[in-house]
Every structure is written in structure tokens, then in C-alpha cells.
Image 1 (cartoon, one colour):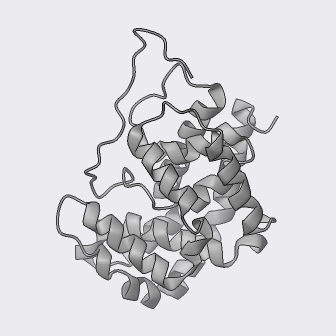
Image 2: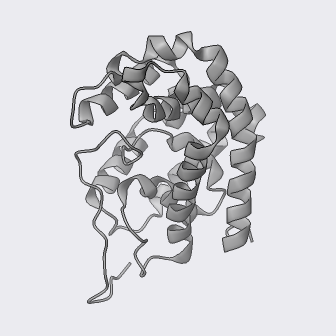
Amino acid sequence: MIIAAGSPRPEPIATTVRASRDTASMDHLAHVVLAGRNPLAVTGALLGDFWRGAPDPTWPAALAAGVRLHRRIDAWTDRHPAVAEARAGFDRGFRRYAGIALDVWFDHLLANDFERRTGEPLAAVEARLRASLARAPTDLPVPFRVHVARMLAGPGLGAIARREVVDATLARIGARLSRPNPLPHALPLLEAMAPALDRAFARLWPELVAEAGRFRTEVGLDG
């Protein structure tokens, strides 16, 4: 993709992250599913973690729509009553990081019951993701391209179904944050809260699917 001279270009997200949804590698599986089947929208669904500000005006429309969908899903999830109730169940000292922990745990729940919740095999979605990323524009932010290369070389998003991958993901995110945090020690707490979190996700997921579907219809991604 050629960038027009003089076009405004927002800055990609810095590598030092805060305790917010700027943190990459949290809920990729959910975002990929909710992006639908358009390859550029799937790429945009992941790019949303690596780009601040308005989408680049020179991007293909579907790529920009994928970034906007990512942000709508994040905002809608944060406002959902089930998520608010789940967040309130964390100790006060942990609550600042509860959103990150919940994102990882909800991907874990999705991966463990994937076909029932989505209507298709996880392997099919993994194949669609790999095909989408292989066709992604080559001038996207370097941190995103590095992350994509690691994803393509790794075991796939479905690995989050495993307990040890949840633990390692939380530890990796915690290590990237700019201040000491409890994320590397979050897994036992999440497991202790598992029944309540299962109920929260069961309420959240169908409504997220509907919200994402409405957005895709609005912008023509499902046409």
C-alpha cells in the first residue's frame, strides 16, 4: 500500500503500556471471531491494539472498519453490567488490572467451548486468521508486524485454552506494564472466581456477537 505524501498518520502505540486496553495480546481470539470473514477486517481487529487515533485515511475501508470494530467491542464490553459485576469481585488492589485479567480469561473460556459458542471449528478460524495476516498491508506499524510474525510462528490463538498459557500470558503482560502489578500472580484468583466468571461470560458473549454483527452490517463488512 502506497502512502500519499503529506497524509496525516497517527502514531503507533509505544512499546511501554499502561494498565489499559492499549496492552496487546489480551483478547485476540474474541476479536478475530467478532470481526467476521473479511480478511482486512480480521487484520484490523488485531491492529486495533497497536494504533491510536483515527484510522489512517489511506487504508482500505475494511481495514479501518476492523480497527473501529475493535474499539467498539472494547468500549461495549467495558460498559456491560456482567463485566462490571465481575470486575467488582476482585480485591481492591487488583481491580485496576481486572480488565486485563478478564480479557485473557474470557478468551480462555471461549477457546475451551469454541465450536458451541461460535458455530465453527477453532481450526477454521485459525486458518482464516493466518490467511488474513498473510495478505495484510506491509506498511503497518513495526510492533504490529513483529507481533504478527510471532503469532504466525506460534501455536495459534487456541493455545489460550490451556491453563499454563493463561498463566504465561498474564505474566508477559504484567512484565510489560510500567509499574509493579499483580498480573503474574492472577491465575489462582481467576480460578477461584471461575463460577462467577463463567456466568459473566455466558451473559456477555451472545450480546457481543449481536453488537459486532450490527456493526459489520452497518459498514458493509458482511455484504
